[in-house]
Every structure is written in structure tokens, then in C-alpha cells.
Image (tube, rainbow, N blue to C red; front, side, top):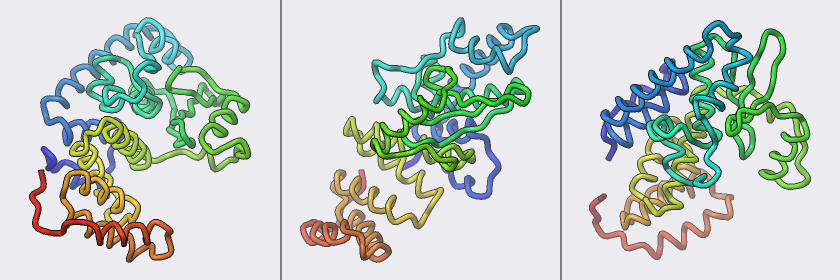
Length: 267
């Protein structure tokens, strides 16, 4: 189903978020798409080097990217696959918080700016340092956020009773960022009824956490959409076995009973 086996080496590997994101491009789109992405990334790096010549990279990197170099959040087509896959993000210089965040993290590393990703609820964020001064950055706009703006984002994701806590701003590791990117990409494919591509994302997520019951359940729903009922039943049964007290388990039992479990070919 996947065009490469590159994700087989993820566990135990030391890869940056950008390398992992390019792995996703190669797995979903093929080596040529990755090659185009790497070419566009090198072009952006060269343009940024020219823009930062003789300047303090920590202070000027974001103004350069979101100014003359044309990086921007895509408000109009937010839920588009063009905003998720890094080859398309690099070609358009448009994206959503997590994809732009991956790109900015890479450029910060490339130009010696200390930075880290934050898997904030509902909206990926960055922490950047300028000397000893740190700022929380929205990678969708390139702007620094104050506590009030972060609380608004949190309430938008978790409800009006949510309160900003230190755990919301903990740094995310590369695999956490990859999972965030894959989950968003999978959701966009599902939104556009591209179930085969969504299934490929689910398979990649299961490379990271092979025995995750929730991801097995979600993969089962995708198998069902693709009329692979026996494979769907296997994933539903895995979820039921590992989460018997979950209210969804009873729903899945009824769903399994309604499936046609004759042999099917995955397509």
C-alpha cells in the first residue's frame, strides 16, 4: 500500500521533524515528490540566508520568512491536503500551524536559532529563544502570543472552562510532532473522502504505536469505508479486547455483526 518502506526505520531512529515529514511525503507520494520538496527547501534556505546576511537571525528569521519570503498561514483553504504535505507546503509557502511549524523548526536549526515545538491543544505552537529571552510563537502567523491569546486558543479547543497550565506548553519530541502532522493529514484526507490515503496515514501512525487501540479502531473504520470488512472486524475486535469498558466497544460489536465477512481484496 505504501510506496516505500522508509517508515520501517522510524522506531529507535534519531530524525528531525523535517526529515520525518519528508519521509511521509515519500511514503505517500513517492521519491519524486520528496526530491521536489528537498529542492524547494534548499531554495528557501538560500533565500533566507541572503535575507539574514549580517543580521541577528534570532530576531529577523520570522520577519524575513513572513515578509519578503512569502511564508503564510492559509486561511482560505485551511482543510486542504496542500497545507499538510511538506512538498506542497514548500511549493506554495502556505500551510497550517503544524506543517509551518515543522518548516520553521528546520530553518531555526539551520540558522542557529534555538527553538522547540509544542503540541498545544488544537493549535501547534513554537517556543523560540533570542538570547535568554523566550517567546511562544504561532507558526500560522509568525507572531508572538501572550497568555491571553494562548488562553483563547485553549478555550477554543477544550471549552470555556479550560485553564492554561504548564503541561500545555511542554516541548514536543520529533515523534510527537510527526504524530500530530499525520493525524491532521489523515483527518483532511477523511474530510475529502480520500479513504485510501487516510488509511496510508493510519498505517504510518501504527508504525509509531503498533498496539494503539484507538488507532486500530480508526483504521478499522477506514477499512470499512474501503469495503475491507474482514480487516475492519479484526481491528474492531482488537479495540474491544483492549478497551472493553469503552462505550464504543458495544457499538463496534454490533458493527462487526453487521459486516459482510466474506473474503475481500484491499484496493
